[in-house]
Image 1 (cartoon, helix red, strand yellow):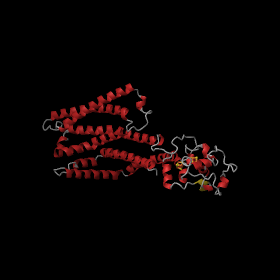
Image 2 (tube, helix red, strand yellow):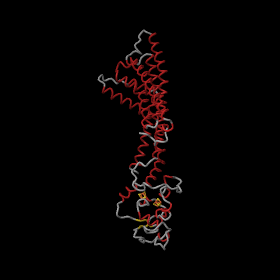
Image 3 (cartoon, helix red, strand yellow):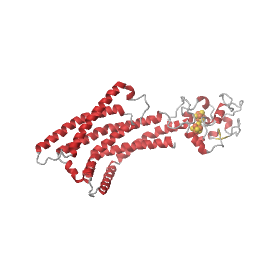
Image 4 (cartoon, helix red, strand yellow):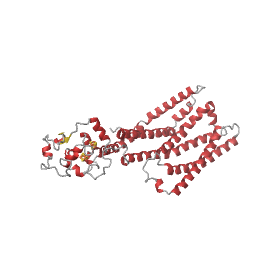
Length: 398
Ligand code: SF4
Ligand code: SF4
């Protein structure tokens, strides 16, 4: 899924020809990265990097090869990442893919070796060349994880703007064709009344009972987008009349008399609302139907957008703040989770050994690996928090 509307991304700035060249470069760099990575993996899994008992020269040669290939690999990986960012940074899934690859290289790879090769695993990863390769994998995890973090954060920011400024997520039924007007805004947009939102029309607002009562239409369940009585009252009392000021002469009683008079003007049933202003009532539809009407109205959705803007930042940032304060507890939780995985794997493993217990200990004591895993989890949780807020505000509209 693209995370912003077309017309504002890098792909719209760069010409077709430039994008084609970037794509070719990406493909070449990816192929070179894949070949070198495959070569190193072949060396690791065939034992060619570790079977050097009493052969120091061959061991040194293997170490040199690993170091050299790793250097080239780092260069092609950087080119792959840079070109991939230019080509795919608008894809929401791109950042998460980088994070998943990073987490796999940092933790999952060695875990997979332990799982697949059981008691032979330590032989494969023994020796200087194998250790250099494992170090290279960790370096790759950082190189891939860093842009992954940035891409996920960018994706969250773009998603936020899309929710705030983009097309409506819902199928708007009321006021879909309404245009925005400049209105005096509330100091805190989340507390805006309907007449402080851009869909309130100045010609209607002036005499609108909702505005005169200083209330919100969605609270009174009647407003200018859904109830023609509001418009009729705002226009002076009858449908045929053009907007005019409210006067006794035209049959509409302005605010002074509205405070107490239970008159039915133009056969409009009213009740006393806030500040004593009479608000039209419609007994023919239920409260649930009125609520539903609001959910499909452009005014209420603008109110929801303001709500989303207000809560989005604290809700999303609450996750890293909690993680920072609970970092030690989370590390313990992570260790526990890894041990649990160990036990599950041991159950699945025919030999019954907890194959990755050494690895779990290694990871538990390794701050960088733990940090990478916790950062990845934090970003995923931040995204979930944002999606949950979107669901509450734009889907079920609470
Ligand atoms: S009901 Fe409509 S016209 Fe009246 S104050 Fe609210 S937005 Fe403005
Ligand atoms: S549908 Fe709801 S939000 Fe829209 S105008 Fe009517 S009362 Fe206001």
